[in-house]
Image (tube, rainbow, N blue to C red; front, side, top):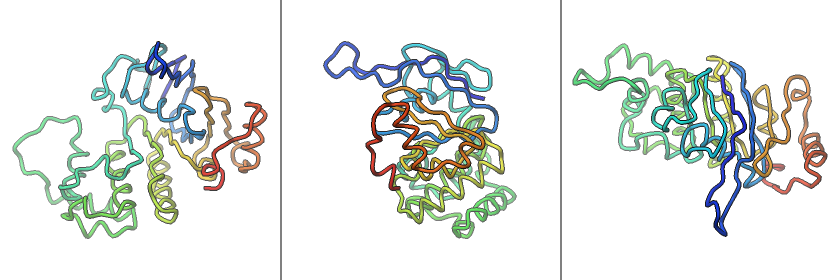
Length: 264
């Protein structure tokens, strides 16, 4: 479903601020894979996600989604393949519009706009059923402005919006990092529910090793613009934080330096 072939990205080339963010990265995701991505600050995690989404062009290599080469497609055209949830709960929704209006916008993504009635009754009922699966009481607040929701409610809604059209690839960019632990756990529970129910191919960046181990069927670790670990199957199921730290030290020759990722 996703093929990354030998991609590299350097920011500010030829200057004192030159930064090689991605170095010949290769990655393949099969249909239905749920891959968590862990790594220290500056490892290249978000740069890789932004390269997939088309936020900026790569210097070399290819990116294919469901067999289609999207390397040269601009970000707005790649949006037809992708669903994305950002770290900031304020992104991904229209704060001054109601919950049902935001869902209607997500459902109509890629379609031509008309002057027909915005939301029909049967559509509203479908939204209520979907929102009820979140367990946050939002099904009774369809007309509430999204800007009035808590960070966790808004992030859960954004997740629902990103997956409403069942994207070929779901990108989760540290989507629980700005939430308190209890709310983050609820959003991750919702993530598992939606991803497993719809069998969505998913790439989830997390700053938390425990979450990276507990979720998904595969874990990759990045360092200095490279993928240095790729763990899946039974090996991942039995993995502990201590195992992961040991593997990191074996491969990199140094200690993992991000306490926040280790302690969660």
